[in-house]
Image 1 (cartoon, rainbow, N blue to C red):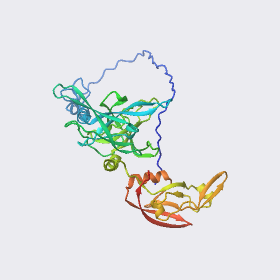
Image 2 (image 1 turned 90 degrees about the vertical axis):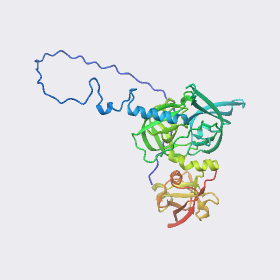
Image 3 (image 1 turned 120 degrees about the vertical axis):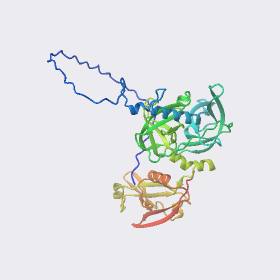
Length: 408
């Protein structure tokens, strides 16, 4: 199994300086040369309209308003999807230096999932919020002017690990315009990406465009564990865009904008979105249970075996997880696997030995606890069974265990 490279996204303030090099100028000396009389060669009539650099086929794609095919498509995406994008404001109660309770406001974005009033956003947008409001913007058909509808929202489901939250509002008829969910599987670097959101909490329903810059990135989530399959884009994403949709050129949601990498805190062309396929996976549990049930084997502590550790401890294998402690009544505990049985001092470090060594899950090698958690998260659900290959006293064994919900 490949090692996952974890990209930790932090917001760093750095002092930078740049030196502007003087513009280079080239002064060319006048050089006399013999006069050349050009030979006139007959040519075919060019397929270019006089005064234009576009071909006839390209010109045919420009409409009476001067808009080309790509522009019309982006405009169509905005017209269809922007009514589904909402601004989210939150109030969080915090204590100041004197322990007085002080309300703080936050802002983010979200989008309408269905006509039942469910709104999707990031978990970090509504984390610790005592009050959440959703702002819908609509065009009044009578006046043609934008009107705002502000509704109180309830948080009905959160998944901290994947930075996803679901809100619910009681909205009047006609206010809720659901998005169309696409798929993040098969995204290609270079294809167009469109972001709509509420940058800086002030500029509602702002559209920016770019491309998919990379796929399958790994991002540290709010719970300090890895979110995999992250989409990277250069479409401008700023603070306040969190929770808004990342769209393909057909207007289908392919991700949820969640983070940026920026020395200044503003868009630097490196934005990240949680893939919509992750949302599809966790959404049924969030709607039904208010949480996502993460599949779990029950490892509390374990060492990642390396050749040097194996040599120091006299263990016959140099790959796998040396179990130190399991949670009581967890799947591995019920299956009979055991943690450390003794402790030893190696140099100035205490180490725990004698536990079983987990080598593989369904034939896939296990190297680290973090990669095991990610593997289970991406490929299994609670109730699925897996075959655990382990080593005990030099003898390999296998046991089938059923994954349960991770203890909270």
